Amino acid sequence: MLEKDRISYFYDGDVGNVYFGPNHPMKPHRLCMTHHLVLSYGLHQKMEIYRPHKAYPIELAQFHSADYVEFLHRITPDSQHLYASELTRYNLGEDCPVFDNLFEFCQIYAGGTLDAARRLNHKICDIAINWAGGLHHAKKCEASGFCYINDLVLGILELLKYHARVLYIDIDVHHGDGVEEAFYFTDRVMTVSFHKYGDLFFPGTGDIKDIGEREGKYYAINIPLKDGIDDTSFTRLFKTIIAKVVETYLPGAIVLQCGADSLARDRLGCFNLSIEGHAECVKFVKKFNIPLLVTGGGGYTKENVARCWAVETGVLLDTELPNEIPKNEYIEYFAPDYTLKVPNLNMDNLNSKTYLSSIKVQVMESLRYIQHAPGVQMQEVPPDFYIPDFDEDELDPDERVDQHTQDKQIHRDDEYYEGDNDNDHDDGTR
Image (cartoon, rainbow, N blue to C red; front, side, top):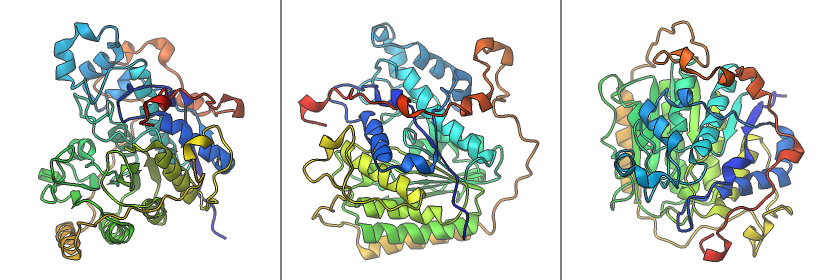
């Protein structure tokens, strides 16, 4: 019998306590709902649950500019009126508001992805899950699209210390622009994004013609899709392209961003995927048996986000979940049916067979230019906290905590977040 995958799962209840504002579509409370579904189905008994360390500013500055990180650390809702020019420079405002505990929120979700990457690097697990991560729009020097710190880029940089090639796959309805941009000039990361493109849909990037540049030419793959794509069309295209990518690129690790705004009925999305269709992509990637880091991402109909990520946690654990949702802290959100499955919408699929076939042909043609996986001479691996651009002495000595100690902060049952701090029940937006 094959040995079961070892799975590490990262969660800190504080991440679901933050509040972007009453009319903002991003509801971190969806993470608490996801976690309680995971608990109610007993999935926590099949994996190791960790509270992530809060990423230090110096870790965030492995990708982001030090001045941007410092500003996120400093800014508060009460002081933001003093920093009008900086707010503009760093793109903070309506989409990316300043809210209470913003920096701690970033530290937690980025810390989870960094810890996940390190556990994979040290072969402590085969699959690592951080549903709080996946904030793929953040840029080196600015926030974008509800994202402040790009945990995915940080996690990939960590994986690159041990792996010559990392494959990034993104099934969020929005283009994974921040990750693509970070690695656009290198062949050590291949980015593959399936997303809605056109009609001025955010962020407006991700044309099939965008394939990378210089050493990175042909190592960025974009699959631009139209409204209404369904399970059959999406999963067929996904499997064909990803199978060829893995065969050609031979990645040492895979990062899979599972944005749930590609589901039918999402408040901001326009695709028509069921949870089963979305989860089929996760199941397919898992079968390669390559070290796998799984994150969340977008998703704005929060009860469906929770359903989706709970089902996908089950997929990663080879556990099929009963359709009837067990009693849990947030059961009323799943009324009136209290079931996991969400039917597709009756909507037109604007992606014709001819259109999807032409995308497939262009991607396959692009992959032909990669004769074989790029050779990378691996230097001596730097330690987890080594960042050459910074002086170690600048670190607060009290903050130098051994990573192994941090990893051992396992969640006890009585530490799980129990409260409901969504503040949104009354405004009708959920």
